[in-house]
Length: 360
Image (cartoon, rainbow, N blue to C red; front, side, top):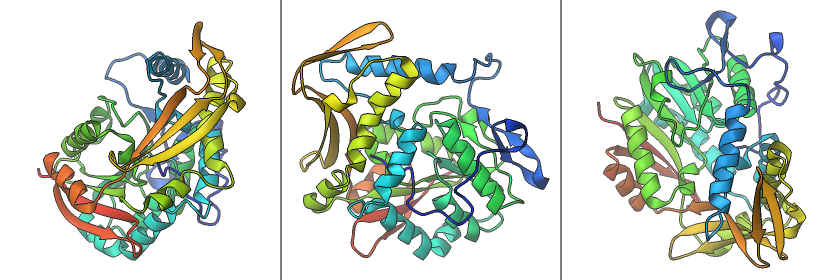
């Protein structure tokens, strides 16, 4: 479970629907609206609205569920319902990640923006909430632009609208894309601006180690001449980790099952979410949380004309969340070609923020 949503929002930022004209827009300079763009190769035809997302969801869901050990891509947790459920998770006392990261951003904002420098284009990967970026933008020196990137158009609209309202002179250019592997992302950004990436929430933990290295290499190339500010969850007492992913209120369990609810709604599938149990545990050898849905009976489900069988006790792995030590993460970033500069840790040693310089 990655920290994509926050438990607190500034006053006036909770109701953001209803831009003039009913379109999907982010406010640009001088009050003009810049259209939400979708990353795709130059010259490619624009597909029908929503078609690409549903097709990709069906394709990737089936690919994972037809494996001997069933999986689902964790990025599909975050439709509107999933985002709301994640807000509930962030409000739970067991879930420390959001509070720890926000405290670091607030306490070290000035030091971090000194690393970022002047006239930077801030690119946030996984921009489903405006809260953390706003902390940086409030203290950044003459930011050139803010580019929120997210796979969910609705969440992106809310983030772009909130930031453009709070910073009316800022160039805000939302980009709907899968930042984990969208090769057209580079072509959608301004090549003349110095780029600074912002990747909060320890979302890097969702990647397996080799995937994390490959992803950081892509970011280092994308951000050449700038840098990356990234949040990383730390190795800690397994009891603390277990509690964070198994909250007493059941918010994480509902969030986990939502991927099946979404498949039913968007793909016409017939999963019975109540027949799958939430199961999350910490593997101290792999240093990761694994989140699963466990079938409570022998059952079939149908997705896009395919029949999927689940034995009683069979699981679907829905997410990894790898944890790091500070030295290990800095070594990983160095292998990716970054130059680690500043690292800060919260007072309880739960969470870390890192400034990584990307050489020109």
